[in-house]
Image 1 (cartoon, rainbow, N blue to C red):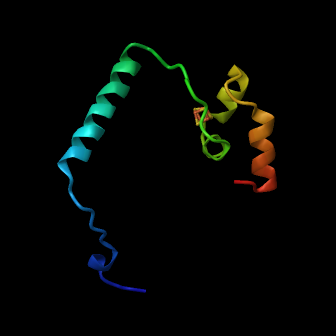
Image 2 (cartoon, rainbow, N blue to C red):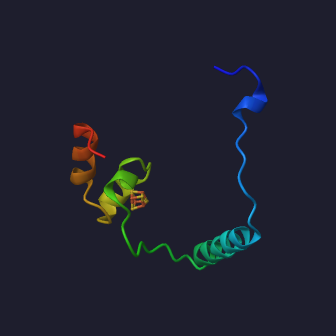
Length: 78
Ligand code: SF4
């Protein structure tokens, strides 16, 4: 295993258009939060909900079927 910090550095190409796009998306998300628009238009894949700390809340609210998420956790399904 490498023992210098630089051995763990990762480089990513800088592309300004992607940074601008990410900033625009972030602005849109903030605007929706400020407008209290929390509707989930499309429920994420099961593997996403399975890792989410809000899954019990979403299950109680009927956004997801909690049993389905919990069954996949218990069976180790991804
Ligand atoms: S549990 Fe709810 S908040 Fe978490 S990813 Fe699934 S739908 Fe989104």
